[in-house]
Image 1: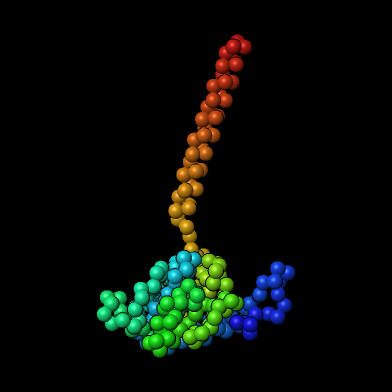
Image 2: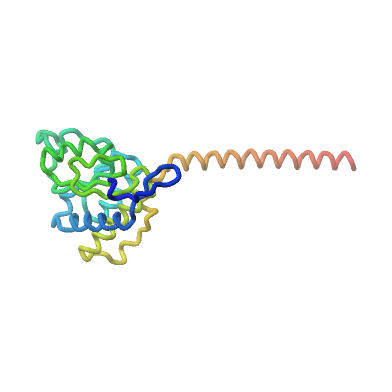
Length: 209
């Protein structure tokens, strides 16, 4: 992955990706995806939680298949399993997390597009898109660009594609609900305090009168 980064690192020693090379690899990946006539034979995989929403949205627009969460063993190699499939292309969000899918696809000779960070191994990967695959913002942006480019190459990019990159981003709904509950409790406490303070003021005024 060294060829996709700048030689000079940040002050903290973090590698910086070359954005021009990122865009070039997104274009190459989009051409590979658009060249497959039946999009239902493309599987987008994300075992990483931050990439699952992006994979769902990508599959929605490109009409591919999304596989999120735990990978079912033997999905590509064992014909006796109920979930056995024979895809023509796999898109992996993180080769380390999706390692089982990576190995199985190598047995079945299935080409792989993978979103790779600087520390990822490129073994069995046919097309690597350099990206920080630990960041929900980076994953959302890359999948959005990839979706847009695929639709553009197929001539299907029209007014129906109105989603912004933030709609591809992971959101913790449960955490938001917890926050709203906490806010409601705080408001109740503040209202009680205000009522108590108001009652004390009225009591003082009555005594003074």
